[in-house]
Image (tube, rainbow, N blue to C red; front, side, top):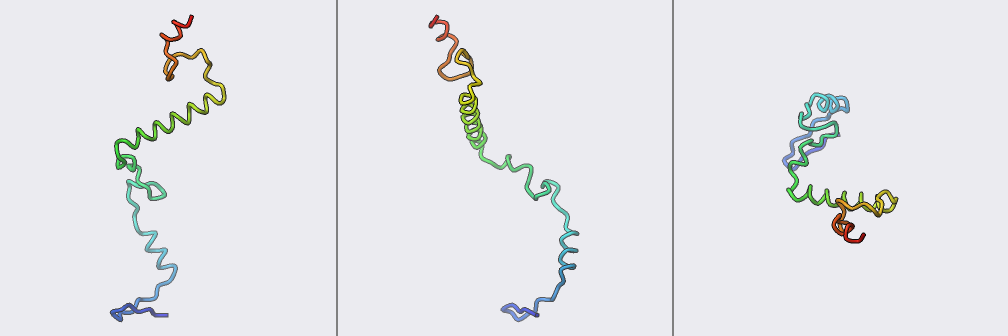
Length: 91
């Protein structure tokens, strides 16, 4: 089977072994992992992307903690609407 392009130049026949040989001899970029994904991908994202992902993670994590009852009602610090000053005034 010989295929030809529009310019009538034939494409040479190759075997599967020839293709594998070429693929194995090609060197991967050192900056890529085993799947060919760059480890520096996060450096190419916009600055606000990491902030966005942090907010998503925090919201999901807080929902899980509250659903499981792992945050006691007496917890004052570092939670919205639960300031220490407000707790002192309630007593």
